[in-house]
Amino acid sequence: MLQNEPGALFLQCSLFLFAHLFGILRASLFYFGVFMTLHLRVRQQLELLEALLRERQLWQTTVPQASAFESTQPFCMDTLEPFEWLQWVLIPRMHALLDSGQPLPQAFAVAPYYEMALDAAHPHREIVLLHLQQLDALFTGDGN
Image 1 (tube, rainbow, N blue to C red):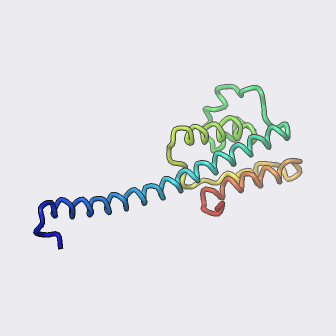
Image 2 (spheres, helix red, strand yellow):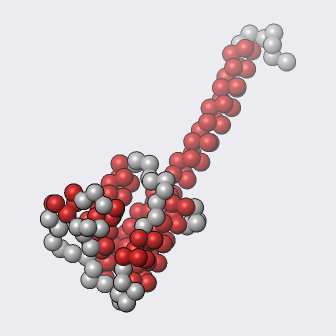
Image 3 (tube, rainbow, N blue to C red):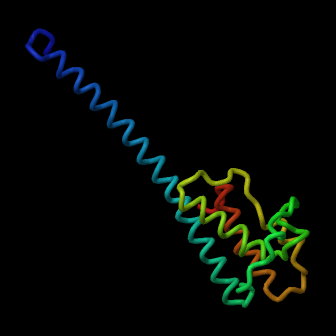
């Protein structure tokens, strides 16, 4: 045992601190790995959603009136069309959270609203719903 040798206490404390710090570092890397992976997957799904809206000519070039964003209704349903809300509210706000490294929403589901809001006969309804369900799944853990 090193108890009686000079520097033994220093060595024992150093080994303890190294093991403790290594454990903290390993836990931190795991946490941030999961955190970054979720952020990356959400960003990718947002980019896929934007690409879909552009491809299907659902992406607009004209910003709605400023008053349209002052709505107190969920999804600005009284002032914006469903695709407008995706383009001008959801996608930019989610990117802002991702860019700033902020925590993502815990309870997140937009697909149920779009199931009701989009006319059943809309030609792009099913593909948009699929993309939104995939985005929602990332927040429930079903998107792994």
